[in-house]
Length: 275
Image (cartoon, rainbow, N blue to C red):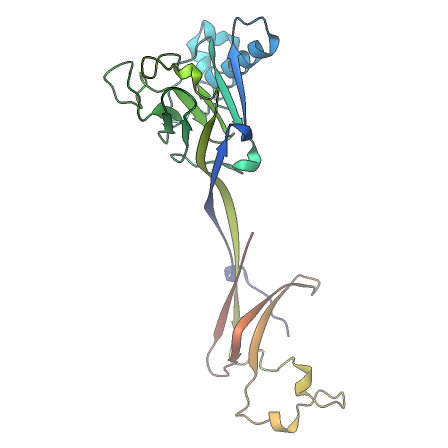
């Protein structure tokens, strides 16, 4: 017994799910760059950061800030991000996409580096800026997450973060030492889950015959057994199958217990599938 769905009986929903990841330096690729380095690789990462993260992708930005307004793969010009700290040296760190899926959830990132003389704790401010929560020194009396005191950036969509500050954390440890030894990061990766919903409706005069072959005589005439023909023996619904246009079974939802099929009121069953 088949029944076709109407458009108003099919719905699609999407929601964001988040998974917590805890990684250390062995799971993260770090590149320290230096613009004046004779080492071509170190210099190339400087240009990579300059073009893809901190400028517009054009050398013309050096003389004309107008070009710096163009979004790039790393800097999508989201409101509130500070990009005023880009020096001749810094650190680029990349997390594998397998470890964050669609992106890093804003406000969930934290980095703890205890390989130096003092433990440094760095978090993101939900806008793409990284700042230290326990810094002894600051560049101004402004907030630790201000454009004066932020220490780097995180680019949520591509799983990359930078440590750009070169000043001192506490007078003996510099931010340039962060990520050079052992450290840990924790954050939440984002994944979109799509839910498909079908409203399976059965009116009183529909779907009242059972498909259970054991309910019929073996004479092949499609006759119910004598003890199942009374009005006090209803048809029970035990499962709902979903079929494609070629009547091929695509999925089956089983009820926790058989439900008597009503011949007096409409019945509706909701089938949902997530993936």
